[in-house]
Image 1 (cartoon, rainbow, N blue to C red):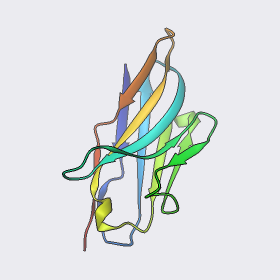
Image 2 (cartoon, rainbow, N blue to C red):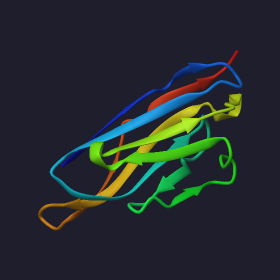
Image 3 (cartoon, helix red, strand yellow):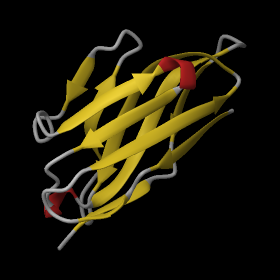
Image 4 (spheres, one colour):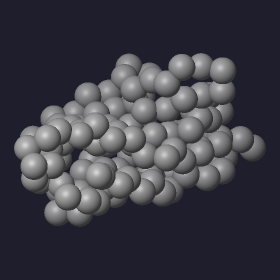
Length: 120
C-alpha cells in the first residue's frame, strides 16, 4: 500500500503564492507519473499538472505560466508551486501518484486533499 501525505495548503491573498508538497511512502519499486488535481466548490475534479518519471510536464491551460510542478525522486515527493493565485483557484488540491510495487503490481494512489483558499 502507498501512503501519500500532502502539505502546504492554506489561506492566501489574491496575487500570493503557495507551495504544495506530496510525499509518497510504502513498498514502492518505481514511481512513474505524479500529478496534482483540484476540485473547486460545485465543480468536478480537474487536472492541474502532471510530471512523468522522465521529468516531462503537462499543464491544463488555465495554470500554465502561473503554476509549476516538480519532483524530487530521491524523496518520492512532488511539488506544486502556485503563483499569482486568484480567488477562483480556491479548491481542494489532490496529489496523484502512479507507479509499481516490488511485487510487479501497479498502483494509482490519491492524497487526502489539502485546502487552498484565496481570499482577501
